[in-house]
Length: 275
Image 1: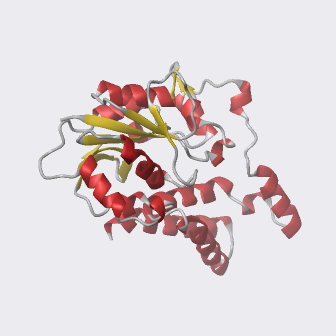
Image 2: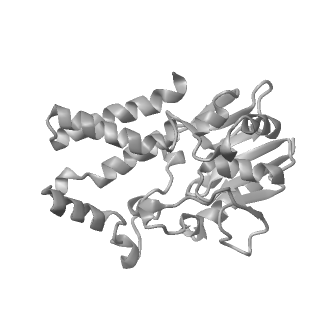
């Protein structure tokens, strides 16, 4: 069965100060190159990378979602006109374990399914292999070119077979700490203690409203936003953060109250696709 590939490389990367995550090097190659090598090793003929042109040496077709930073669904919609194989890999370019992760996907896809994706307790839609015709049909029903749509909105109606794997196989790079862990703890000094993009704003908020440093748990809120964006939809992330703040405030407003409120919202988001 013929197969092409769509690599997603156009996110904002706000948790690493807007750095180009696909160009982070792990074990001597960039995450973009690792993704490319992973799909080529599984027989991908044409590889489409959605994002800014990052590596002119890669023999790929470059595409861009409209508008830029419109999310993974918008990126897939932008790439689909450039693929023509029966199946297509979909892979985010922030995965240090891209080669073994893609190798875990079935080849060929089982009869009677529209695709398969890894599942580490949650469906990892962005490490998957799908029927191209099924993706096109699903994308045709989306409004606004899929801007800010969740992967569930695109794939929730398809027959996607989960492939159970250890979470270590799907651990992506979202933060500088993730990158340090992927590199086995070895990072240059300039990468070890980078200034977080939100630190100055957080400090200004704390000073203006008489808050302490522990009152603004940046990582906790960013994790909440990520989980809600992945499990529900990107626009639901700020709304959910606001609701979590309301819940915590009504409970007393302590750090423990905030953690409990965030955990409750995240639990809802993670189960949203199965409701």
